[in-house]
Length: 267
Image (cartoon, rainbow, N blue to C red; front, side, top):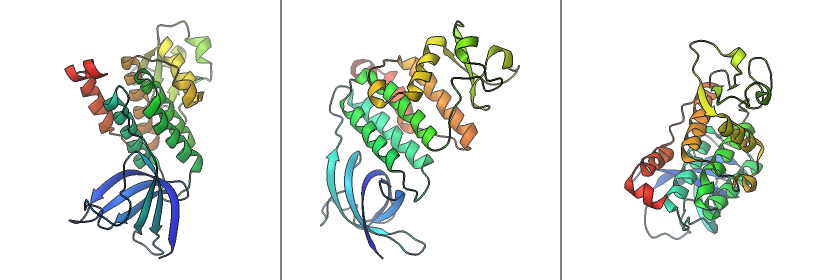
């Protein structure tokens, strides 16, 4: 097996023996990659330990045939500790990003710009004020969809092409069809069709986040309820357009946290 090196983020690990596990990485040079971590379940080891939410330099032996290669070494480059106010929320959004990457990234296809964007997301989740976390995550979700070929139509009606600002900007609510893939103006709406409705202001914010940088998104505050509707819109869109049903456990945990006494205290 040839030896390779790449920067990488650990996305998820699966135990498969008493001492070893399989780890899914998002690597800069090789894209999504599953490798065997021999002895990785032991506390002590000869090489650097793999850590979640950390940028690492990974050394591994790649498989030339079917089957998986294995990790030989790792060096920590940067660790995102999420120690600022709102630690659980920061962890939840970063974990949800990992869930989306596992679900959507193609196997073995290098996506270096998306890799760097993911590093930027973890940096923002580590540093921004906690009120900025929802807008930063929604922006990441939108960019991830776009880079992988899924682009919800927010600016123009999916039916007739009319600008939403011309047809619905003065309305109280704006309707989005996950099945049709975009905004639907009042004239093109169908009886019995399923829609997700956002306030006009919330929809305007969503269209702005679609083209915003993470720096710009970190300055935009959106309410938790509005953010929940945006995420429902994006996950339902993904379900229809990509044929997958994202079940983001991290966001479900965040929802429970927000509804609990702990959530009301910690944010």
